[in-house]
Image 1 (cartoon, helix red, strand yellow):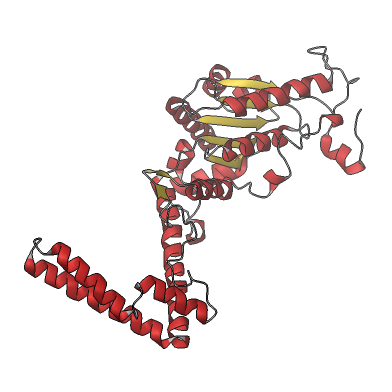
Image 2 (cartoon, rainbow, N blue to C red):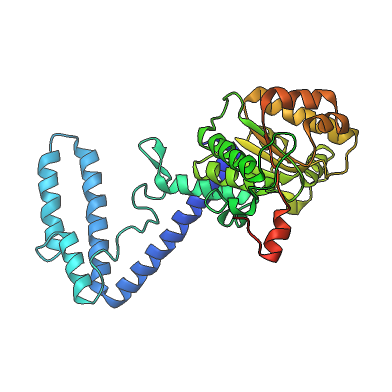
Length: 345
């Protein structure tokens, strides 16, 4: 999973807080049990004292008497526990007073990794889940992706009798192909792979943004880091970072390094932002850096590839034509159809 050092540190702080909170639970349980069962506190105190004494004796005498000292230690433990092993006596006392036998055991949110996030040098399943949750949060799409994804994309809004003059295909055929291309792109996405960038182009309201959401959910669920911004928000963020205008409340906003390094960057509605020389330069640098690093980009825009060259520059248009899979959308304005409750069948 492609996470930055700062993201990893943030996740480890979550686990540290989890361990602290569970320790407080353990302490509260111990206090309650000791208050209701005084003998339990005396037993644990006696076991702890015997353990310290045995350790000191072992260090002083060397290894020669280790076996006899172990037997002596066990005998003293049973004596302190009334002829039983301490853990057996502890369980009995807890049962007799209405507590579960494991009431004083260590408390873990995830018993598998004991709240470390790691098992045998690999991510625990709980850490994988936390990483994906972080990706959802930082993508800015955590809510909308439950509504807009490949499972909910509805082709019935696209007419089979509305024909595109350029291709001779119907709106339904074009959008079926666009949906298939986006699904294949998401399924086969790999960091560093060729053609791992996508340009969705076409008139407003035809489903471009919905398709970017479909791709985002598919990749986040697979553990890829995804960041989504409208073009206006993105270039405003870059300007804040470049010119030192990030406020305290913006501390969690991704910086230039993460914008360049996350697995997939989605830029929605390119061409709707206030375009100037700074925006053109920032866009080229971002595209160029991500392409060289093998990081994916998905762009949706109302502009055609040739119009992108006119609005920004030929070198930007060239980068897109060379490195992006082009997907054209066509049909009626879906937002209007949804508003009036009309589907095409």
